[in-house]
Amino acid sequence: MGNSIQKFCLIADIVTYHVGVAEKGPSDFLVEQGLLVETVEYFSKSHVLKREYHDEQQPFGWMQDGVFELFEREGRSYCWQTEEDLVDAAEELP
Image 1 (tube, helix red, strand yellow):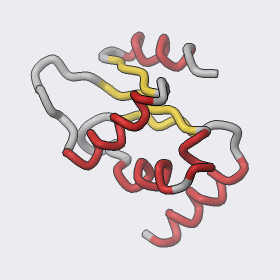
Image 2 (image 1 turned 180 degrees about the vertical axis):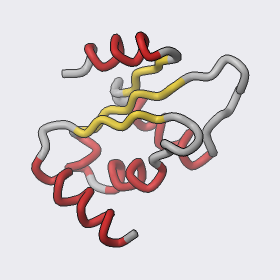
Image 3 (image 1 turned 60 degrees about the vertical axis):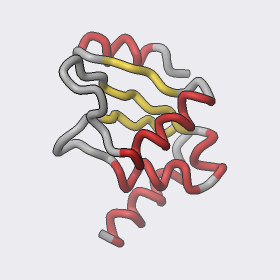
Image 4 (image 1 turned 30 degrees about the horizontal axis):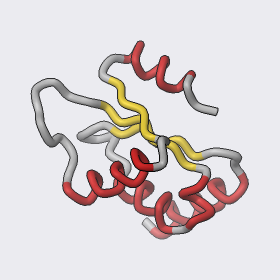
């Protein structure tokens, strides 16, 4: 895992923006999500595209929900349900 975190940080240091796509299940990005809010530098250039599910009230864990709230307060959280919604949400990004 350490090697993948190092790779993530190397890339995160040089990009203009970070965009996380949050879904439950195998594409979960809990580790990366924690890294995005760990430093002011990363958090200030991060956005999250959070999938909403009709059939579940709380599809994500409490740790992720806390991070999502940080992005929502900063106006950098975008919700989506379908792939078309995801494309539309991505188009709203700077």
